[in-house]
Image (tube, rainbow, N blue to C red; front, side, top):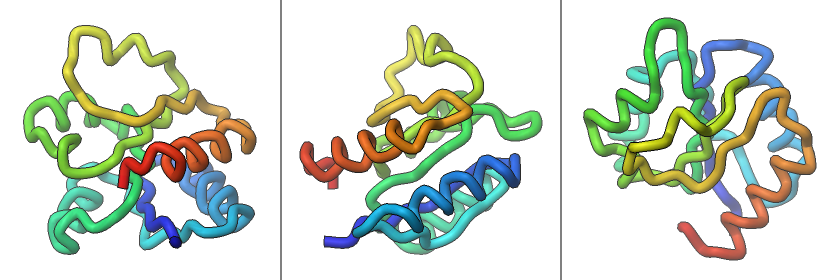
Length: 124
């Protein structure tokens, strides 16, 4: 079964790194990349959230994806893997649902482990 993902990251190198990781990994494709939270989640709504995983940067320009998800509840609609240069402590005292937190720069092995975790635990 092929996993479908999107990438939401305002840093071009962040998106490019994940796109390259996907290309190196069998059974996963990138449907699209976005550089704002609004564009990414508008796209998800337009496809009825039919993706297997969303790689989501925590801080995009002046927008916090954590605040966005806390306000909208859309973390309950998709499988989120946060990507950030910061530690996961930002999620303390929130009930945001997510699969994993990948700290930048993301090692390929960590990416592979997350994909295996998604497949094994059947978050789909």
